Length: 444
Image 1 (cartoon, rainbow, N blue to C red):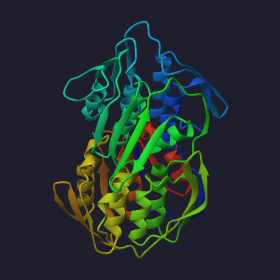
Image 2 (image 1 turned 120 degrees about the vertical axis):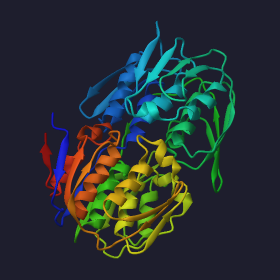
Image 3 (image 1 turned 90 degrees about the vertical axis):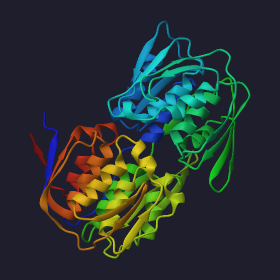
Image 4 (image 1 turned 180 degrees about the vertical axis):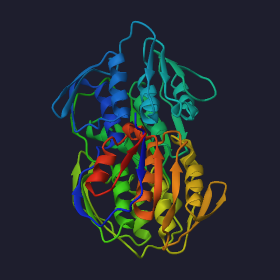
């Protein structure tokens, strides 16, 4: 099976309107919450990627039925005690850290032992950030070397907890919040700023939650409940998926793009804020509120006047998945860009910070590193002519897609391995690129 592509031509100018894949974070959260609701939930425009399909497979193994009707996944929940098992089971999260970590929060009252497994990449990631707080609820969790597989056995004697989440991990915060639904009393979390889709969903579903926002932390209280009702939800477009096309347009020649119906939640648009500080003129049009989330069309034009940035650290968490692309823009910007405290990038599907630095150096960009701080010396005249092979990146979907964008705006002859990696989050990525005029050749 062909799993390598070749790109050897820069993309020509374009002026288009596109749609991208649905929001993966909200898709997975919606599936998990629907599986614990009372009655049926209808999820429209659900992202059909491997991570979300694995979420559907997981709830099915836990006894929850669902069916697809045209553009709707209908899920039949039986409440917060609705997972019923007659024997021990294994759940395979594949490459999805969101699924593996969040579902642990919903398993704290399960009546049998459940083992969470993942692929090779996910099995290298830190799960102690989840197991440590969940143990405080009174459940039994076992894990070797702080990683998958994780075994969890629920309890009938749960207790609320107080916890300080200081990593800025939305997955950790969300797992605690989901667990808190099942513990009588009030769970209190002091959480470093991170994406807030779970909080927004809770409010939308009338789940008791209080949030006090401070400069660096949010103070969150979640009250244990007896249940919540099924719901309808239309999943919007994904800002992370949009970011690849935003940067493609920004660095291409005389191009213009509108991306329709994107979730522009303020905790997710760090890349927009950073790029605009660098001289981009990315705008939101036709903004509207949908169930607490902000949706908009995104307008972006090519720019030849990008400048380096001293990136504010308070934007790190809201751009953590997009720094690969931000680094690419910094490589073409005029001047020096400084980024600090990006160690969390190495806790993702691959050691992204390490890989990104090596990639930039391979294409001739000067990079200085001091632990988790990096300095990128931009070159606005950067043009590539050599042959580049991108492989051995642990099948990280974002590394693959970033490499495609680099090839299309910088030139050179790129052979990029592990095409299948995009199935985890953005299966139609290459199709959209081709529709914009990218010349992509499949290789054996």
